[in-house]
Length: 242
Image (tube, rainbow, N blue to C red):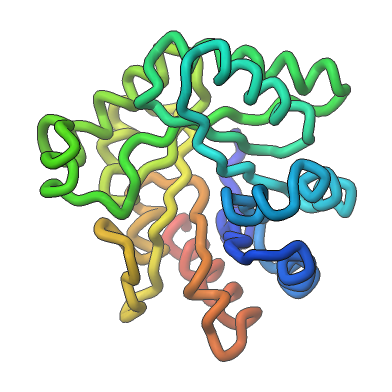
């Protein structure tokens, strides 16, 4: 995989409630970011047709639905997701190895059936809103990094292309899995508000740690000038990559 430039590394999170708002953001940031993340809120509101619309308009889409179910259901959902033309699709590693393997194969099969390029399938490891105390309450053993590495190993063995993980664990993942595609949410510019994220780094820190793509929402969306904010984050990522 060729190293992405600074702009290509930044994916804007379309975490808005309506298609109209999402279209406005996509139009405003087209050419300024590498792609757009469609998560649960927008997908439930607008459905798969909206993903197809973004793809038809030439946008790269990360379909962030974190499938987590039994293998047969995961496979069916992933096959349907693969048909939409998204570049990235994710599942949750906690679904287990059999479900991950079924989903990865089904997503690629769905894309081939639809005549589109198969997506890269990613496994969510530990949500960036979770800290050690919350993992302990959930019965997940060890500190976040240990849990992330165990789940990343499970994903790799299941034929998944990479992971969604905090930038704080990116370096350890890169060491253990050199060719993984690493996507990091919870990135905040220096001095930015962490919000509901527990394990965050700056864009430069994330790239230096080994992240390929950075998912950024509020730091761009809530900036006085979102285009300027997106360019600044892309420039910071590019400088770290250099």
